[in-house]
Image (cartoon, rainbow over all chains, first blue to last red; front, side):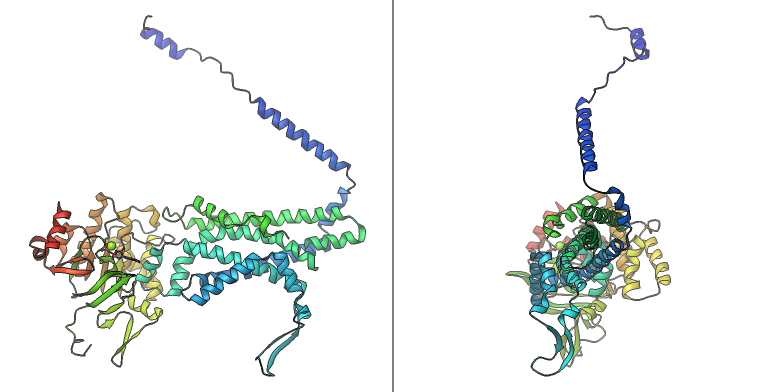
Length: 315
Length: 262
Ligand SMILES: Nc1ncnc2c1ncn2[C@@H]1O[C@H](COP(=O)(O)OP(=O)(O)O)[C@@H](O)[C@H]1O
Ligand SMILES: [Mg+2]
């Protein structure tokens, strides 16, 4: 074997490259084709169904459905906001040094997280069966400040609100606790060393850092809450599903009205998802910290904290 | 405490028989130490001697089981009333702590605040001083620790040495009566130790009262007015650099120095 001369090397480096034959991913084409065929079959099947597609847009913007949409949003927002506030309070009790407060917080979380939401809603709604009147006064005396009929107070909204909110507050307490615990002890000591009071330490140092851990699972919970309001339909609160059923009870277009409701669920859930990632990003900006938990670690923590929806929001 | 002892010549910092235990572990056994205004005292000693615990008992990050810590004539954590010490609320204790400063081994900068934000936090939030004035001062302090160009950076964007210098600036900005340093260079890469020690030596030269737990014997030799050797929850011996580092009396001190200087 002779070594190639310098001239041959030069020729080799300037010659035309050989054409390359790329690997054909036949498998991918086959799978894609199968999926499309199945989708086509489903679409054809759906079109054969006894459903009046043309009526759906009309239901989407019908005043009854829109009122249901508004009620869904009001219930979800009211329950979530209250749950966050209550959750923070319970979390602070849980991490406090007061043994009674600690115990109470643990029991609270255990109870309200343990019971199915639907059961809690039903219990609140039927409260009048055991307490026909709600009174606020001094026991063993005749002094009564407030005296109300339970049925007048416990409207469908109030019962659904209490059921959803109390359950969610127990989850929020755990989320907030995990957030507070994620902040390094050294942060509190540094804040102490410059003379910050307990309130300042919490508000200025601990909470802003805990937010990065708290926000992602809270966003997920809110999305679950939007869907969880569907359970209020059972006691007659006119949210999206009840609104759809109300229309259907007149004209029997059950599927058409439900699909209109489904459309609105997709819209509000998508909007909430966008809002969530926006919030997450804005709290990330202040956190170029390689020190704190990384974005990925926080997502993992968030995922661990969110209980699968099957357990959460289905009756 | 009689009034005679509370006379003006009393040292700036006076720790009287401070004890602390964790479970059955006696971490501090009646440790007493006095530091005069303007003095620089270095505490050396093996790991587990109780040096950090002692420092944390001084600004009451750790509550001593027994003993008193007097700072500028006030008992830390207490209010002297009708011959008794009444424990302060956490709020009032916080106010007291503002007159002391501390620098931690792991910096403990606030990651969500900029360098300037870290330095201004105490003066603005705790001392409630006008933020315009504070900002001017904070810039000057940061200039002094050589970080005038890092004012808008976040701690995560800085090297360890820079972070510790910010932490020193944060403590200095409070204009404390004295500074406590707990192994300020132990978490640093060797090549970054110098820049932090230089800043500390500068503070000492300016007359800052300093109590420094350190393993940097060079720094102790150069800067300390007094060296304290701690072991097993007590002060074994103390004195000038010559007395403790060059001609130690106690066998424990000798053994320790042989080990660290080897
Ligand atoms: N929070 C704590 N809980 C239990 N033990 C502790 C705690 N802090 C310190 N100790 C113990 O106290 C002893 C002294 O600790 P430390 O003051 O950190 O020593 P040094 O700073 O001299 O190395 C060690 O044995 C340590 O394990
Ligand atoms: Mg230590």
